Length: 416
Image 1 (cartoon, rainbow, N blue to C red):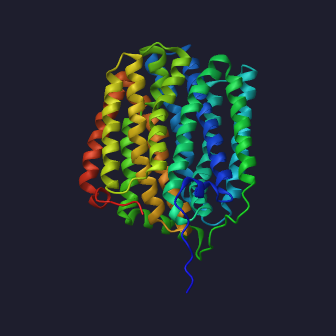
Image 2 (cartoon, helix red, strand yellow):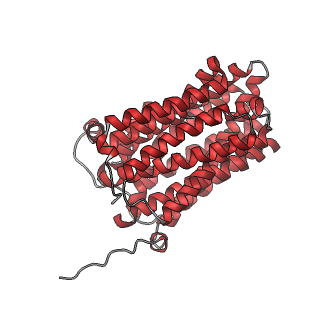
Image 3 (cartoon, rainbow, N blue to C red):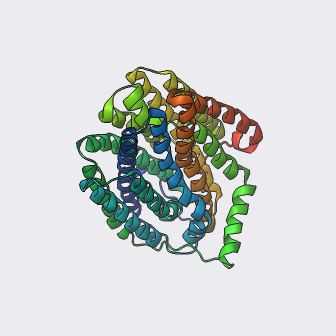
């Protein structure tokens, strides 16, 4: 009997896979575009609101961007997941990128014509969220189809590295572009989304999942039942939901940059990039030396450090200390995200990855976009500093509660 040699678990082996480099590059440039667009939207909405509103009231308007971006996830989560498990995943991504290009083009024209308004920006953010609602589960489910199973943990680390590099370069570059012209920022995102579309179009292998019998509703229920009953999957995504929902301070960074630390749009770009600097450093380490043991404990430790760094950031009035805490916060978040994503990909069968990814992205979207709205609401009553402290303490409470509620997650050991 002939034994098929295993694929070497190296970076070279990963990028020698025929289609993975196209997928990785598309992920990188699309995420850079998302980051630049997010910076521009937040800064524009806050500046427009500050013309007629107080700091606290304007903070709420910034939080509304997160709310309208989250609503499409809530509306389409089940349909998007089932779609990713039924139809060709590459084609779904291409259609979503066309929608994103159209949204970025509208923002570019509005900024060029000086016709941007809060209402227009929120409407486009909602439409963009509709595209991302279908993009995310198909994108998550496509990645594992392009690499052998033994390379999956390393691929997840490199996927995270692409995201974190984008989160470093995007906000920093976005801050510079916004200071120059919002038109330049939105025009750049349009080009980046187009580059991602062209790269994905070069993927040649089949990306259609194995067909399953059953109606669309039956398949959606199956995905929900799997997510709910698997304690590792449900525990991991719900921990991310509640910890980041409470602890997220990203939406308030325009407020801190302008009215707490007084560093302007350039300083705002650095603040937005700081979490990704820490996250990218951790992602680089994990791409070379993945976690071998005590994965669950590493994940809980990361969430706890995330909460503590958020508290220190809230107290800080020093720009360098605020940047440092955001770097620590990002590094801790990357550690927990790596463990969570690897565990979920390993325990979820491919025909169900789209539906599980959709539920996961709903939770992630709730923790990020809805967390931005929560931060804006809390800042309306407690101020930006009070909102940061409230979130950091909440993240620590959630960490302790989930440590007791999900022992299987806490005891997760090897990521194999």
